[in-house]
Image (cartoon, rainbow, N blue to C red; front, top):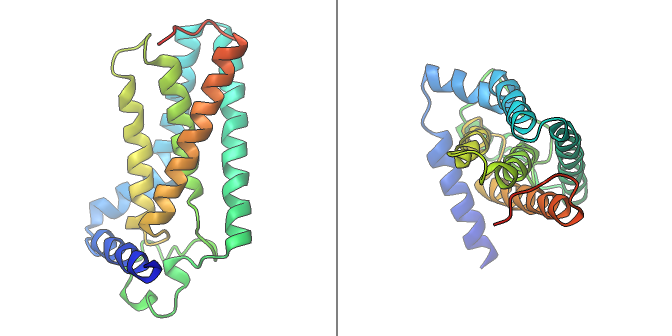
Length: 189
């Protein structure tokens, strides 16, 4: 059963990583850590301050704490589980399309990029969904960031799915704490 899942993971990985164009290489590189992260972070911060006023700054601090928890948790999992990234697997490396010869760290389960982007987007979404039409578009950033990690060859799809799950759980948990403690006036569901 486990080998079947590993085979599916590799098949999906190569289906995504196998298609490369010059403009997509640039775009995926940016979603993985370039300008789009800055735009997304400033946009989320701006929306929180615009919708919540001075309390928005407290929400930005909480979002930063959630980001740090997400990031450090993914690093702990990588160090403990030691699942090799595709780019560090000698049997696969010859078939992987690399961008800028980027290979990432040695271990990849689970994706910190996926977890970090989903924690921010989930937290912001639940705070903004009743105040801002189209708040669901925040998830486009998280999905494209996550996709970019497979495209660049540094994560398997299951690394991404686990990272997205953890990020969404942390983001939802942060929102529920804010709502329960009434740190800011949150419009109820």
